Image (cartoon, rainbow, N blue to C red; front, side, top):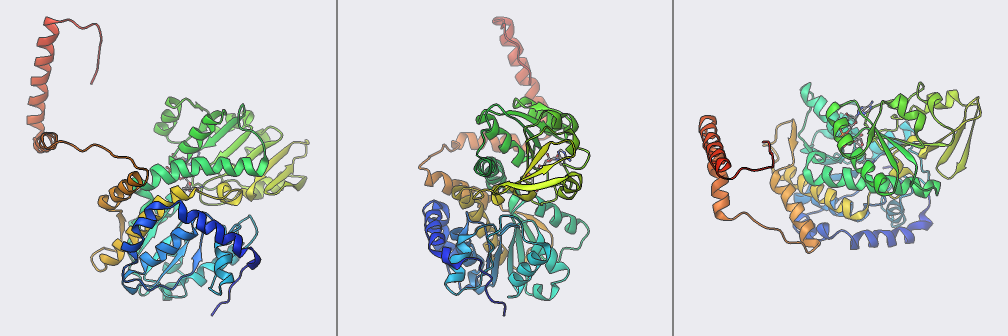
Length: 449
Ligand SMILES: NC(=O)c1ccc[n+]([C@@H]2O[C@H](COP(=O)([O-])OP(=O)(O)OC[C@H]3O[C@@H](n4cnc5c(N)ncnc54)[C@H](O)[C@@H]3O)[C@@H](O)[C@H]2O)c1
C-alpha cells in the first residue's frame, strides 16, 4: 500500500490550528454531523483544500453512512495543505505538496489512483477527474460504486456529456447545480477568494484599475461584483448574449476580448474553457498586466504560448511570474495559471464551504439511501436537501423568514391548477377591472406587464 507523501510534517501543528478555526466557522456541518455520521465507519483519504479539512472529515463520515467506503477529492492543486500534513503526521495516509502550482499530470494521476484504491462506494468529485478514471483506466476500482456527487461546473459538464452519450455507469448527483451551491460558492466564494489571492500574491490595489473578467457566469458575476466593490472598473467579455446583457445591466462595460486586452490592468479568466486567453491576445496587453485564472482547469490561459512569446521569464514574487516580451513589456502570470484563489490564497472561506460540504454530505447520503433506485444518469440535488441547507444557514445566522399564509398557499394552488383558457379568462377580467378603475381615476403613470 502506498505510503504518505507529506512535504512538511513539521507544519502539522499549524494545520491543526487551521482545522480548529474552520471547525468553529462551519455551523451547518456541526449541526448535520451527528445525523450524517449515524452508522458510520470510515476509511479516509483526502485530496483537499486548506479551507475544508474539517468539512471533509464530516463528509467522509457522511458518505460512509451504513459502512460505505468513501474518499474525498478536492480540487486540482494540493497547494499548501496543513490539513493533509496534520493527517500525515498522525500516521494516516495523505498526499501533500508545498508547491503553489498544480502537481504534474502524472503526479496528479498517481494521487487520484491512490484515492480510488479502496474501491469506493461513493465518490465526491471536483471537476470530474475521478469519475473519468472510474470509467477509463481505473474501472476495476469502480465495481462497488453506488454513485458520485460532483462539486463544480466543469465536472457537471463532463458528467452530462457522458450521460448524453449513454456512457455513465453510475448515478452522478450534480451538487454544483443546487441553488445553495452556485448562488453562494460560485458567486460569493469565488468572488471573495479570487481577489484575496490576487491581492495577497501581488500586494497591489484593485481600486482604479481596469479589471477584465472573461466569462460572466456565476463565478464571473461574483468576481465582477467584488471587483466593483473594491473600486475597479470592470470590463466583461462574454460569448453568451444574455450573460453579456446581464453584465451591462450590472454596470459593467462589455467588450470583445481583443479590445478589452488593450485597456486591461488585470485579466481574469473564469469560463471553464480551454485557451480563453491565448497567443493572439498576449501582444495586445499592456506592460505589467496581471493575468489570472479562476476557472477549474489550468488551461484557460495558454501558458505554453505565453512562454513561447517570451524572451525572458522570472519569478517576481512568490506566485507571480513575469514574462518579458521582445519589445520589453512584462506580462505577469499569477499562480502559474492555476486556480488563483487556491494557488495564491486560502480558497473559499470556511462559511461558504460549510454550505457546499453540507450539500455534498446530504447528497452523498441520498446516493447511499437511494442505492438501486437512481439510474446511471445525472440527477439534481433534491429540493428538500437544498432547502434544508438554506434553513440551517439562516438558523446559524439567527435569521428568521416568513411563510405563506394558508390563504396564499390556496391562491397559488388554484392558479397552478387553472387551464391556459381559464388563466386567459382571469387575465381578461383583471384587465376589465383595471380599465374600469382607470376611467374613474386617470393615472399619470404607465406600467407594463
Ligand atoms: N475558482 C473557484 O473556486 C471555482 C468555484 C466554482 C467553479 N469554478 C469553475 O469556474 C468555471 C466557471 O464556473 P461558472 O459556475 O461561473 O460557470 P458558468 O457556466 O456559469 O459560466 C461560464 C461563463 O463563461 C462564458 N464563456 C465560455 N467561454 C467563453 C469565452 N471563450 N469567452 C467569454 N466567455 C466565455 C459562458 O458563456 C458562461 O457565461 C468552471 O470551470 C467552474 O468549474 C471555479
